[in-house]
Length: 427
Ligand code: HEM
Image 1 (tube, protein in one colour):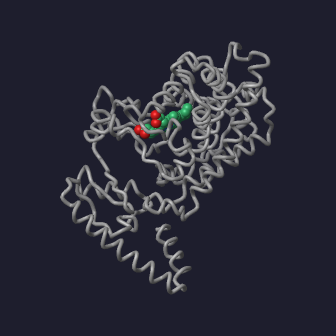
Image 2: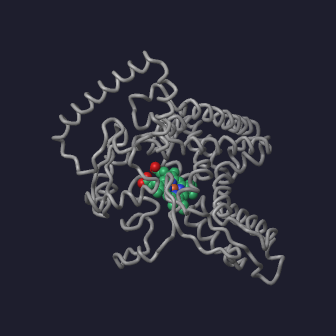
Image 3: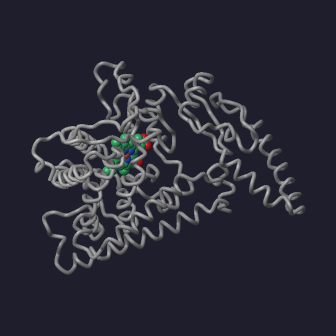
């Protein structure tokens, strides 16, 4: 709807110019004729059924902000697999575990590419980072690095001190706010994001010259990036218009990407200098960035990485900070997942295709080992250390809201009171 509003105001601005109006009207008529001809000639393709769409804009004007509910309703009408056109782009929606299996298992190789928005492409050096890369040698290399270097069992054990430190810091922080309202969502995810950031560049960050300005700038850029990711972009629905960048999203994302790039280049240069000066490369405990720089220098190692790949891997810490906060699936009625297959009913790692919050198949969440450790640890620590109550007069609100993923409509806010008898346990 916002898109149509934008289109409406754009039209209003230019409609005073007669020549322009005539030219655009003729172009639109020609485009509609081409569109109708193409859709008639392609109607013989075997595509699943789907709702009727308008020429050019497709189903866009009928999209509802509650997309997940709308898709459920469409599935009731059109069955487990249906199509919709958003602008000129064809989308296929699947709705059963059997079809999911075909996509994430049987035909995984074909379906494991990413369809990048213009913003995502600009942000990820044209799809060269781990999350957004297509299924190719670059992605395999990055994923191997991420899983085997950063999140290996050994490294995760070695980083348990980071987890303890961050969780203690959080508990201490809540202790200082006893009796006040705490946003559980924010506090648990910022703890998790800090742990990831420590694992990625703890040594560099602590030893380096990067001060609070650096942290503040990083946060500002990350927040801006996140904001751009949330904006509608005409170019995504009409790729033929992408060249004009009508919403200015590509331009703005590239600006932020360059700022981020500069910040990372600074960190990488500092670390490289330090390495050549005092041989930090030999130190027993290296953070992820230090390991990546070792691999960059070792061209004979098949896992060797280039500078862009290093920057792309470092950007995972922003995803965790800014985007992963939208990834958590709401709890609503968790018991609904337990009515399936007895053996797999508790499984959330991708084997149970009725419930796979971390995805399934080769593109499933690479951060699962750290996510499951952190979620459990944070939740248990919050419950162990405090009693929690809702603010006076408020009730649990478990209603949802769809953005890039499903979120609670209202964040969970609760008031802590002391649970442990000895206050020193909160330090
Ligand atoms: C509760 C927390 C989390 C949930 C529910 C979650 C869920 C997901 C989902 C659904 C995907 C997409 C799967 C697909 O495309 O099929 C994904 C991808 C990914 N996640 Fe997570 N995630 C979480 C935490 C994390 C954390 C903490 C990290 C980093 C340490 C992380 C790193 C990644 C990466 C790198 C990918 C892309 C993998 C690829 O494309 O190969 N995730 N996650």
